[in-house]
Amino acid sequence: MTPRLGDGIRRRRRALDLTLAQVARRAALSVPFLSQVENGRARPSMRSLQSIADALGTTAVQLMAAAEEARRVDVVRADDDPGLAGTGEARVRPLVRGHHALHALEFTGPHDTDRVFAHRNDEILYVADGSAEVRAEGVTHRLGRGDTLYVAGGVPHSWTALEAGTRVLLVAVGDHVEVTANPHR
Image (cartoon, helix red, strand yellow):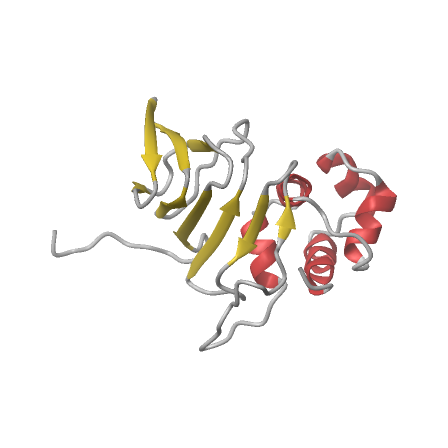
């Protein structure tokens, strides 16, 4: 992640008129660590970024999107910045940079199953390698390589990788986009 991630966090914190100490307390992080993140001297894990986002009333995806300039055409190379570290071998890498109508992320390795997501808009999960389990609406779905799962906006869900080397691609309509029902249905 570029140092701009910290700039975006600082801008959001200041816009909400919050101190470093207030955000650190809400995120259960230390003030020195949060300061280092804001100043580009430390890279948060995905879990820490999600905690910061929760404390700021936004999402980790929105903070990552705000860290990059939106481009009309952009190539993200496989060997570009690997993104954020999760726990152990877990990584998350943005596949679309900047603030756009859609977000795409690549998750590699184990994923935090304790976190339940419920986004405003629709998303799909695509298993590029390995296998994953997704829980949505009380049902557990086992997905293998090449499988996709659609989740409508507002549906709480969580997922986990089931084997080493699992890569899950998540594509979602941005939470800042107002999606209206199709009047032709």
